[in-house]
Length: 426
Ligand SMILES: [Zn+2]
Image 1 (spheres, rainbow, N blue to C red):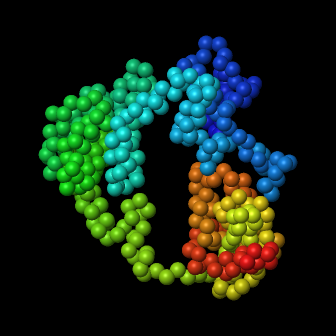
Image 2: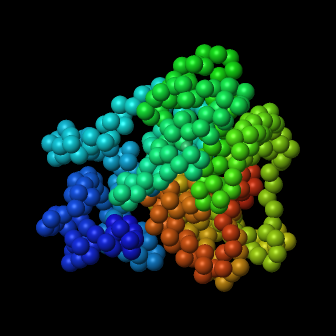
Image 3: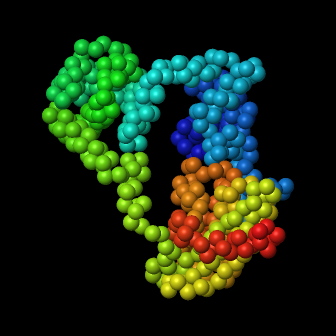
């Protein structure tokens, strides 16, 4: 629905609803199983989808006369997620709108061993490896056996031994994997444990080491080994590059060593930021822009009890000289983040009104900057404002939006507070 030009949407539209929208489409004659499943899922969407107002007459929030859009009402970014859909589907089952059959897949997932998921999310490790383990556990890693599900009659074979490539085979039962597991310091005879799924296999290993002092290190090494087996498999399948079991072991050991070194030096492995340095050595200060660009600092102050907000705008040139400033009171804002987004929009409009072009924008609202850089997780409440911001930014030749700590945004902050004071808020 949000990507009508995608291959899947165009395929279904051509076959089932070329004269209507997806929300109005009928089952049709001789429908495929996949189409029936989509229509079952549509019941969840129909029950809880909402319009995002772009140019609605009752609430004109966009300056650019944008068209209205459909948005999922139960996530902050307005996009459908399995988690929120599951919660709604449970409610619809209770109300008799859906049958339990529609959500049996989610039920079986819920019944998986909670201990394993606790273990999975508790591992201190890089985010990409968390994601990789999650894919193994959900059996969605694209190994050869998965190919058969998409292409009937076609099953990919293991690049190491030619056997049927399932996830347990690739990581534990293949001769290649067995040598890797036995040849590393863990000395594990992986073929001696017989389990049908990745989760059940990992549970056996958890039982074996859990409670021991070395468990976190053992666990991390196991994850690095799994990761390197996967890399070796992909290199062999797609690039013809051959790794020996010894290569896999030595790379996994280097991974583990680098991890320990990084942790001991205070690097946050999720963000990549060197925490010890960033805390002690840097005193944040406002800096002018580089080159011949203007810098706009914006800030939005907000009074929660009345929803009243103040906007502060300060524009300075590349020497740090004050060029222009503006204070403005705003009404009916739902959150601090909306106030910050509105302040940024006001700042760009103010720059255009004063014929200032070629600029960078700085604010202490990290969430607003993240929304502008990654629209996937954008709060639906500020989405329309952010679309205006992007358009104004193009018109004002804005080269960058950046976050600055509050200490670097004092001037705009003082102006925003001034706007509130003028409005009668001390
Ligand atoms: Zn194999």
